[in-house]
Image (tube, rainbow, N blue to C red; front, side, top):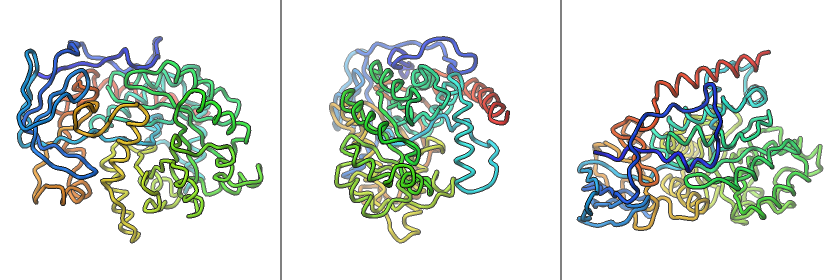
Length: 451
């Protein structure tokens, strides 16, 4: 039998009833953390350096306790035979927007990025806490089913909903993912206070951060306030720049300088900065971000969907990684789209490094090793039922990731040492009820968007 549990206490806040926001929970047995799990005979895969090896893992207290040719179970351990299965580290999306789950199919007026921007603004203004919670549960459950175990989420509500990030955390809690959550700061709209309040209480599988976007609108004093808050709270800054083709002109007209120059002047770029998008940045601008140690996140599918243009991830440096933005929380699909689009442009990327960098970023955010299937790392992993049609080893791994593996092969997912998905079934939420709640939330917010 597998351990079937979700530790709701590490949601980082978020209580109070919701009409359709809370992810319906199943009645399950909470196992003791002292009970371990031994995974026998799986083909263990690590991404950089690429390694493929048949070995056992013993999981205990949420961590990988042992790895070897024959890890011995201790009394009370569950033993799972994974012979013939692949075991990957859980995938990481370094930039996501869970609320956008409710935008799927929403009507756009016009075409191109301008229409996308108008729709996003109306949606953000109409979104409330119940709907954010429902979106988090539905979007998070999709991610879990695709093997995504960690996400960096930027909430873009404009309604100044107090405790919005706790509502997002509550939606994710039952699903069981690991997450860094932030609300996007514009100016004096309460978002910065919300980020700091959430960061002060986030724990367990959750951490807080501060997000910034719309740099054609955000004043310099807000950027300085964000920098000071990041330093005092010791949190990451999640900054979106270079997605809107009009952003540079707006920033220069209103504040006398382009967005990247303003970020640098505010001392907002460093090793604790996660920059997403970068579509309309020049090479000198990218170079200035890379030289200061920033993480750069490529979101290929969302860029294509919004028709904003194509970034050049081959220029993202040694800290380039992947995000899913407003698309499904499917990092494997994102990796494939990014790799194929880059190859089509004649500038191929190292897809394994981009995936591995997501683990490195998550490790920095949580202060523990995330990704290596080695002793001491957190036990976030994905079991895939994939029968490779060609040799599967370190030299062919990238080709299988790019052209073969997909979410249909995801069989089971463990986060923080507990099974969250087992034999393709979520263990602590009812997927039918999660989807029903999301549809009700989408109906409500769509009506407010058109009135």
